[in-house]
Amino acid sequence: MSRLFAFLFGRDEPKLSEASARDAGAIAALHSASFRRGWSEQEVEALLLERNVLAHRALAGSALCGFIMSRRGADEAEILSVAVARAARGRGLARRLLMLHLGRLAGLGVRTVFLEVDAHNAPALGLYRRAGFREVARRPNYYASDTKASADALVLRRDLA
Ligand SMILES: CC(C)(COP(=O)(O)OP(=O)(O)OC[C@H]1O[C@@H](n2cnc3c(N)ncnc32)[C@H](O)[C@@H]1OP(=O)(O)O)[C@@H](O)C(=O)NCCC(=O)NCCS
Figure (tube, rainbow, N blue to C red):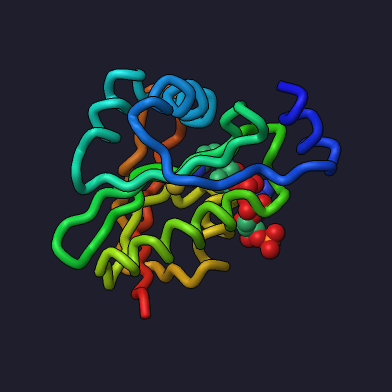
């Protein structure tokens, strides 16, 4: 935990690396803290064991402070989720994770990356637009629920060179 504090006070940079099924518990915890509908540890583990799923993690010492995950099909991939621990946001960590991940996907032969994002999620839209993603479709009222005003989903696309 002291490494996480060192990072938060600017003396350390989280280390990025590929994630494996052993990270399922920590990724599920961060996912649940970041999204209204969290993933269980079992769901995350099942995803990480899929042959076509790729995930990267950011570690401050042994503490997980970010992750990104995608699933490939032919020469396309979909980003399934990305999240950074609340206290570590706004320091470029999601951008580092995303760029590392896109580079690895390109190395695996992926030519096009898609994702869905809540049209009201300004931090995520900023992240993706700055990384070259462009809107290709809108799904009206996609995130409607009893507890939240309905929001459209945007489908974003980025071609990898
Ligand atoms: C979206 C999220 C991953 C961004 O993580 P982060 O590490 O804070 O992002 P970064 O510091 O790398 O910022 C990268 C870019 O994102 C955008 N951004 C980040 N935070 C932002 C905010 N609060 N408001 C607007 N834009 C923001 C900016 O364009 C930023 O680039 P800039 O600083 O050069 O302008 C983080 O807010 C998060 O985990 N949110 C909850 C989970 C989530 O919504 N995931 C996306 C689902 S599709």
